Image (cartoon, rainbow, N blue to C red; front, side, top):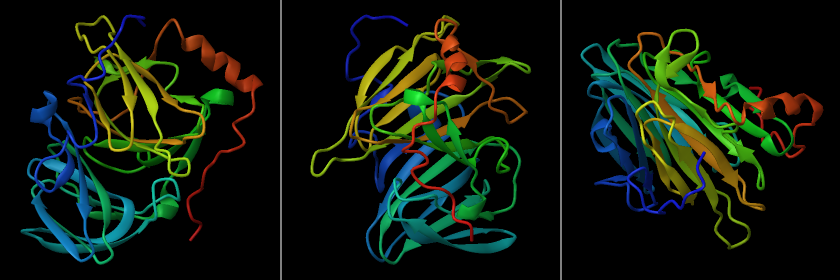
Length: 304
């Protein structure tokens, strides 16, 4: 981890308003990111709004960030319709979601309007369209003390079947550090480390009328990649992690931090295996001696 000055503007940090194209507030494709697999779009629909797009060679999960919608997936075998209840905001509760396979057409429609994340990954297998109930999302508390955070494992490698896509939500109480100790997954080491591209999409809770902020660090891993970033992040910002040690993600005091992680890679086996930074891995040994932050969980999955 270096201590040199890092420019705020970087090809790996896309501030809110600078990552969108067309109907999307965020539109990260593999071509734009300069890699091979992971995608993220954020779609804002007005009341009564609709949007249709082709899945192409990627599988997709429609994840409500705020509001609800109906998702219709259609291909040569027919159509499937999923009504997503959604949620008020990412800080208010776990949401349901819909999975759409590659080579399908997706249509989203929202009577009341809302904001929806479209998490994607290039893939080879065509899996069936499915509904993911909010009650089935595993909610995990990770770390203790000031490293405490909540992880909503809606599409973690071991919780929901996809071909390549891995996606989770992380909620960090104000003042805490998450994505810590710094870790990496940029090379294939069977049984030890996965090669996964990663996208972070941030939303930061305001305090009254004061917008929130946080910080995200990515540092070179020495394996040939040179990603080196210290970014001040705000709601709507996106950070791309093609390689390197990533973390910490720091939430400013008084401002809870949310980020959506989207990961995908080339390996045949879909798994999330990480290596901790050797200078900082010791912090895990202190966790059993400290309580989990009493502010967590911010919410739990509904029981019905």
